[in-house]
Length: 142
Image (tube, rainbow, N blue to C red; front, top):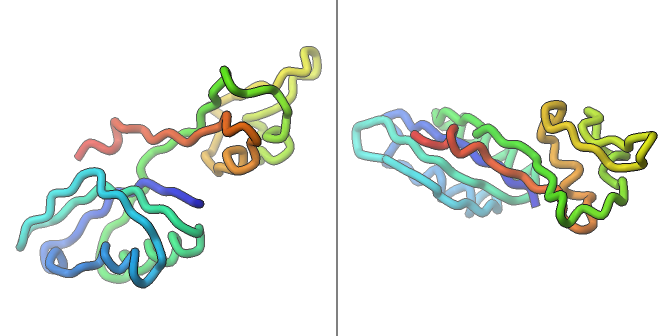
């Protein structure tokens, strides 16, 4: 399941339309409203975590944009839970930026978060779920 946290800005003229509801019905997506302020005749803002099949998420966000909603991704980062990682190395084979790599001297899996671009491949492949996606909550405050 693909997840994405976004900030939606609704122009005043469309705040009365059930656009977010259509994400569920027409695009087969789940959503969790984390914060919202929508008043008639004023710009509306909503922080939303949306999840589903990646192509459906992409189509749903395109749908919102086509209806005049400004969509912005919230900063996210991948973190490793070192206490449960058992150093299998599966993540190193799939990491496109080499943020996860095998140290040739110690044969230890190393993680360089500053190289990570948040593609989430490592999250999907980790057999013990030691890799996790965290959202930067400082960017969520609206």
